[in-house]
Structures are given as structure tokens and as C-alpha cells.
Length: 621
Ligand code: HEM
Image (cartoon, rainbow, N blue to C red; front, side, top):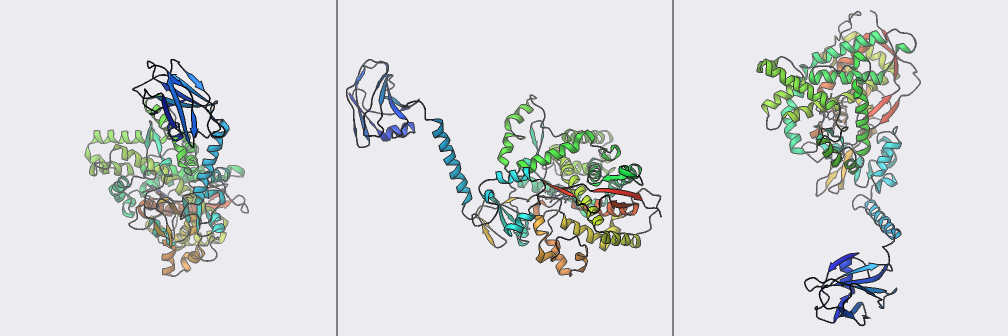
């Protein structure tokens, strides 16, 4: 029962007048509602009693003549011209400040069915509002996607082998509405319109979902944090550590891991018969990717290669982390009820709940702590002894203390592992897959390596490829570019929010607030830019094209993203790829165990290859 204060007449008045409007406003119910069957009037206790003698209904007003009477509660039928009529009025002996209080009751509450009906009506109205949203309804896309983001969530969950937005663009065209407020572009011009120089559009709500958690706090990475001033200041502070020149200093760390990789492959698989000689390439490339990034970040491998297994369940956790991110990121509001649930985070901060903390966080924190202790013992000069990223981050903490605190150092180290390991390993797996599926390309590359690089000592299990040399090998470069084109590791839209006022994207005026992104897989398969045979792995296209065409092709490549958030580690990752690929090819002869069989791709945040099983034999002389 709801009560509301309402003046219904002077207290001494024997007649109070209640209008329908007042009652409706007071109770937020319509008196014409069939459910409403009683009117309750409460009047002050110590006042002589209200007596009602009669009432009348006139037009839409109910006149309730009330006289004072000593009753605690009175009900009486209401006859009005309403259909169905109100049936009763109760009078309660409560009086406050000369104001008569009244309430309406209904015969029981409003039936659950009515509530449900209202809910359904509201939901349907909302869905249709989304569907016909101004400025977006003209774009094609999967029918249900225009109503709700749930469509994308379902698609991610039930369709893990879907092609990453290539098929939707093939079906619906160059601009596809993938959600009530989300447009995906396959137009190359859209790249500069969304990510181009000077654009600093906000990242969408997809990104914060990707934040890790440490002791009940968001442990943001550069990738997950949408705070533009923080991002810009941090990138400015650390960009110098990621230039092509700076990454020369990390080459020895890459070499160290490549050497361990070669040793392990040789000892475990090379020249072995049967299944013992077969590598699950995507798994072993991930071991490499995680170990090399550990070496690069804090100067020590995680131990995946040496153990040949998932150390501390880190891979399983990262997989689960990425699956969560790609699924929940489609409908970010759900995240507040799950991983970033404020209540769970609070409980974790109070030590009453455990489980959200990302296992890499303590590991990264331990490395940072050890390094700080080391500096403390050895003094400032120790900072120049080593050259890994942690040193650089700690150095930035000294030089840019207003931006880089311990929190940023931790966050950056974590970012390296999350952003740099799987992406590189996927790229490497894909490249070997394409080479092995295209024996002519494989042979051509082998020939280039044999003829243009210094001869390799066949007994050596060490990386002897210099990056500056490898980078100049034209066919190797063409293979690497073609692989990036065919298989950009990231399978998501790099979503941005159109600023208020709207923007012109690829010749279309898009309303402010719309979430937009360019589908890398779709632009990488644009026939006008790359030629008719876009579905074929053909490195030669990079060698045959005119300089102008190559420039256009390069501008259309989104594998590292573009603009403000372009991959920070691209120079490092290039160094890994240009060194590892020739080294492996010069050390082992590789063959697919089932050359006719295609790989399986699982699309999440990254497009992960599976079932690339490779037999290896040592190349002797
Ligand atoms: C082939 C390997 C790699 C690929 C394909 C790749 C791809 C990408 C892409 C597409 C983005 C853009 C995200 C966006 O716009 O939202 C990105 C960002 C990033 N990548 Fe990479 N990445 C690779 C390797 C690495 C490595 C090795 C590192 C670290 C050493 C790294 C660190 C980062 C960081 C820190 C960001 C966030 C940049 C920012 O938001 O400012 N990546 N990467």
C-alpha cells in the first residue's frame, strides 16, 4: 500500500474533495485500472472523527464527502462513473499537520501477468527503438544484430570457428551493422577516418572488460585502459624504448630464447619416428612466444620451452582470460556482474574473496620487486648493466615520475605478456602453415636463405641470423607481409566511439556515439587493393606490385592496428619473426603430417590456429 501526503480539504471541513488527478499522481496508478478496487483515506488520530455521508462522482472528479467520526479504519464502497467502479474507501484515524493522508489499495496487488506484460512491452519497445535507430537503421547486417548486442555474444559463444568478420562483409557489404550501435567497415578509406593521425577517439566499452584484476583492483594494461590522457602520457614516456633502434638492444634476449627453442625441438622431436617426431606447432610457438616475451620483459623465461608444458597453468589462464574478454566484451555491461563485479572486487580488497587475481600479476610484481632490490643493493650504476624492458620501465619511472609509478611499471610488464605472446606465436604458426601448404613458396624461400645468407654451420643449434640482414631478404619480407595480410592475428574490431557531433567515415556520415571499427580481415581481403586472388597466399604480389601500389597495400594493413594505439611492440615482434623464421628453416626440414588437411581456426580476440602438426628433421650440411 502506498501513502502520500495530499491536501484534500481543510481539516475542519466535513467534505473533502479528492480528484482523480491527485490520486493518480499520488499513487502512480490509474483509477481506471481494473485492479484498483479500494480507496484508503487516513486521517489524524486525535481529531474528532471523520464521518462520511455520501460521495459522488462528477466527470473525472470523485467527491468524497467525509465527516469526522472515531473509527480507526473505515472502508466504504465507491460508486463512480468509472467502469469498473471503485468499490471501497477506507478511512484511517491518523492525522498529521492538518493534512489528510490517503492511499489507494487494490484488490490484491497488480497481477504478476500485468507486470510481465509491461516488461515485455517495454523490452520490445526498446528493441525496436534500437532497430530503427536514427542514422544506423539504413545499414545492412544480421537481422538480430540490429536489435541487441546479445546476437554477437551468441555468435562468439556458439560459433567459435566463424571467420573474423570476413564472411559478414562478403554477405552484407562494406559497412555492416553488427550491433544496435556498432558499425564494422571494410572500406580501406575508413582506416584513416577512424584511426588516422590526430584522431584520438575514445575506445569502446569492449576494452575495460580486458583489464586484469589484482587484489580487488583493476590491473589495467595499455590495451584495456581507455583513459586517453593517461595513455598518451605513458606512451610518450616509453615510446623511445620500443623504436627500431632501441630494439637492437634486445636482440640478444631473442637469440637466447631461439637457442633454447632449437635445442628443445632437436632433443624432443627431430628425426624421431611416429608421433614422437611430430610437433603441435601452435602450442610450441606459444611456448616460444611466452618465453621470449618473459626474457624481453624481465630477463627470464617462464620455462615453457624447457618443461614442454604449461607452467603454473599460465596458458590455460590466459586462454580463459581471452575467451572471457572476447565473449563478455560483446556486451560489456555483463562484466559488472562477473569479473569486475564491484561487490566481488570489494570483497577481494577486504580479503574475503580470492580468485579474480590474474596469476601473472604476482609473478610480474615479484620480478619488479626483485629488480628494485637489486638496484638498491648495487646502486644507480646497475641500471646500465642490463637491457630488458623492465629496466626501461623502471628508468622511465625515474625520468617521468609524474606519469610512470610502480603501478605503471607493473601494468606495462603485464601488457607485454598479454599483448605480445599469443599474437606473435599465432603469426609464426600461420606463416609456417602457409609455407608448408605452398611447397613452391617454401622452396623459393629456402633458396633465398641459402643463397643470400652466409652459410650455416650444420652442427650449430644457435641463432646465427642477423636481423638487419634478414630484413633485406626480399622474398622473406614478401612472405611475412603476405602472412600478415592473410592472417592478421587479431580477430576483433578495434572499436572506437565516434565523437559527439558525428563524423564522416569512408564517405558516410555516422552519428556521434556510434561504436565503429575497421575489420582487418575484410580490408586485408580487399580485391581493389590486393588483387583478385586475395584468398590465395601469394607472396609474389608484394614483389610484382608497383611502388605506389605497395604503398597503398601497406597503408591498408591493420595487423598492428594504426594511429594512437598502434602496436607498441611491432619492432620487437618483427625482430623475433625475421630471426626465428630463417633460423628454423635453415635448421630443420619441416613437413605437415597431413598436407591435405586444413587447419582449424578458433576466433576470439585473436584468431588462433589449431591442428598444425609438423614433422621435423635436422638439415645436415
Ligand atoms: C605479430 C605480433 C603482434 C601483433 C599482430 C600485434 C597486434 C596488435 C594490435 C592489432 C594492436 C592494436 C590494438 C588497438 O588498436 O586497440 C596492438 C597493440 C599493442 N601491442 Fe601488439 N601485436 C604484436 C606483438 C606485440 C608485442 C611483441 C608486444 C610487446 C613487446 C606488443 C605490445 C602491444 C601493446 C603494448 C599494445 C597496446 C598499444 C596501445 O594501446 O597503445 N605487441 N598489438
